[in-house]
Every structure is written in C-alpha cells, then in structure tokens.
Amino acid sequence: METIHIYHTNDLHSHLENWPRIQQFLKQNTRRHRQNGEDVFIFDIGDFIDRWHPYTEATMGKGSIHLLNDCQYDAVTIGNNEGVNLPHDNLNHLYDEAGFDVVTANLYLENGQYPDWIRPYTIYRTKRGTRIGVLGLTAPFPQLYQLLGWKVTDPFSELEKWLKPLKKETDIIILLSHLGIRDDERIAAQFPEIDVLLGAHTHHVFEKGKIIHHTLLGAAGKFGYYVGEMALKLNDDKKIVQRQAVVYNVEELPAVHDEPEQINGYFEKGKRLLGENITFLPQPLPADPFAETELSKLLCLAVKEWCQTDCAMINAGLLLGPLSGSVTDYDLLAICPHPINPCVVELTGRELLAVFEQSKDVSLHQQQIKGLGFRGNVIGKFVYAGLEVSAQRLRLDGKALEPDASYTLALPDMFTFGHFFKDVLVHKQKQYFLPEFLRDILKWKLQQL
Image (tube, rainbow, N blue to C red; front, side, top):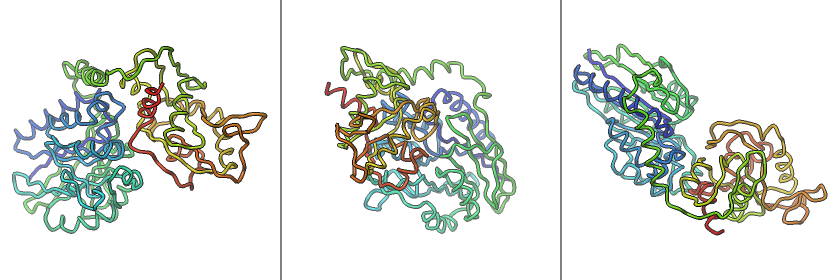
C-alpha cells in the first residue's frame, strides 16, 4: 500500500515560543518518512502571523515566511490575521519569498482576478503518481476586505465552483479551511468529494480527528500548542482504505538544545527593529485599567479626532502599561498590542445615553475576554472624549443630549463584533477605519504633542 503523511498547523498567532519544538518535530519526521520512501506534506491553515509579536510587527509578517520555508511547508491558506490585519501592499507582498503555495479560493483583487501569489487550488503528485488536490478557503469579512482593497467571496459558492474540476483532475481532495468548526462540519456533510478537511479559525482541537460521512476532519487548536498528523493508506486503485489522525502536544515533544535562545532571539530582533524613537515625554503617562488616566484620555481623544466624530469611547484595559521618556514603536506595541481598529456608529441621543449607562457597569469593567482582537486581560473602566456628566445629565461638548438627535460615536471595533451593547449596536451600520490600529493612532497623537 501507499502511505501518505500529512502534518498540519493552524492559528499559531506568532507564538514563537512554541516554534523551536514544532520546527524540530517537522524536520525530523519529514526526514524519517522520506527515508522510508513515504510521501509527506505539510500545511498551515492560517493565522500563522499575529502582529502582537515584535518580530511579526517589525517585518509585517515576512519574517514568518522564512520560518515556514525552513520547515518546507507545501501550502498554506490565509487567515483573517493575514487578510485583514495587514495593509493591502503588505499582504500583497507578504509571500514574495515563499517557497510554498498559497491556496485561497475566495480572495480576489477588487477587479475579480486573483493576485499573482494566490491560486484557488494546487495539485501534487506522490512518488506513485497519486494526484492530491489541495484547495483553500478563508473566513469571509467582506466589509473589512473591501476597505483594504480586496474582494472576499462566499466560501460555499467557491467550493461548488472548484470541486468540479478538482474531482476530475485528482484522486484525493484536501481542503485547508480557515472557516471555523461549524462551517467545516457543514462542508463535510454537504461535500462528500472532500477526503480530508484541515480546520482552523475557531481554535478547536480534534485529538484523533473526526469523521463526518466520507470526510476526515483535523484541527490543531491554537498558539502552537499542538501539531496535527494524518496518515492515509491507499490501495492500488488509489482509494483510501485506512486513515488515522492524531495531534501531538508540543509541550511533550523533545526540547531543543538552544530553545530559550531561539525564542528570545525572535523577540529581541523584533524589538531592535522597532527601536527608533518616535517622541519624548517630559512627564510620564501612567496606565490603570480601572481609572481614567492622562494616557487613556489621550488615546480616546486621538480616536475621536482621527475619526472626526462627535464623541469617542474606549476601555482603559486596552493600555497594558505606562509610557515615559523616549518612546519607540516597540513601546507602543508593548502597551497596545491589539489588532483593533476604530469604528464609528451613528446613534440617537437616547441610544448614546443607553451605551453610556451600560458602560458604567463595574462587572463589565472586570470582565476578562479572549478573542475579538483583544490581547489584554480585563476590559477595564470606560473613558470618554466629548462626553461628560454635569448636573446629573450627560452632555456632549457642554450641551445636553437631545434624545432624538443623531450623534457619531467612535469606539474600538471589538465592541461591534462581540456581545457588548448588543441591544443598541447590533443593528447599526458601522464604519470601520482600516488599516491603522489603535496604537498607530496613539502614535499619531503623541507626535503632535
């Protein structure tokens, strides 16, 4: 029988502290399989990069491409961290030096053409001539992609379109899906042509895979905590007769001899690249997640001015530390690592008051959240620009709110994606400001001081 080994990673999010062991594991197993005459393929299912890490931020993700090249990955698909957290030109040139294929069937240029670094699918041939078709899909955020100069389409429509030629041209079909577990399970039920589906985005783990009808699903969690492997055995008719899936806990893999040096090296290299002074503060700006400080007020005012709105609101938990003296890009990354953009909504005075009242809930300030781009600990106290309470009434720039008048509010986009203020914000039209993150806007304001 022919044996094909597939290794897969996903949602590493630049947690390079786990990379040395992953790198060693992939290289050793690739070498072993090839010595045994077996074919091996390595895939990443997106969100390999995350701009919280100084090495990723300093190189705008390009440093990570060298890591993937070094392990001889065969193909990747992009995740939302590559797709909507990089400016257009940076994403367009992210893979200039890639030694692997980028397969993402539902991402296009605005003119409806694929950029020259993307293909919807690719086909590999094993030593015995088995044709393996690999197709990729990424999570669709149409409004955000459009603001960055891209066009993202419905993944199910793309599957309908591309599976037909793939089925004719291949013996095995593998889908790299950065869509999330619900869509993956739906795809497995709806498209039996897919033999293997490697999933991501929702950070789920299938310790021994999951079979839905004909399809074997695999997923390896997040942050490089796991590496997944699948072994497929094929008969002479190139039909899969045996399949097995497993994930390896990276903590339990053999240590690398210079592991601490490698991990620290990535961090320090990024820190050096981000070390240019951008301003000097004669007085320190402290941070406190549960208090309104000069730093949090400065960021809130910067968001209001950047978005040119009537008022703004941020949560103090966005700022993870103080600033003082010489300030560098690294300092801003360290205190504001979130890939969060400002967003503007238009509210009536009555709705604005409702948001303001909800934002005073102390239990909300204490809430710990993960995801939505937030890289901190707690939400923290809410800070406002343009809004103040006077004589027990909410005022905007000194004037009482009119219940039926319209006002524009700028706030972090995380509050429009989650379950916050949902009774007010959920149905509102939202204007997102990309590609600048909140730290970029803070930098802009600091340089004006």
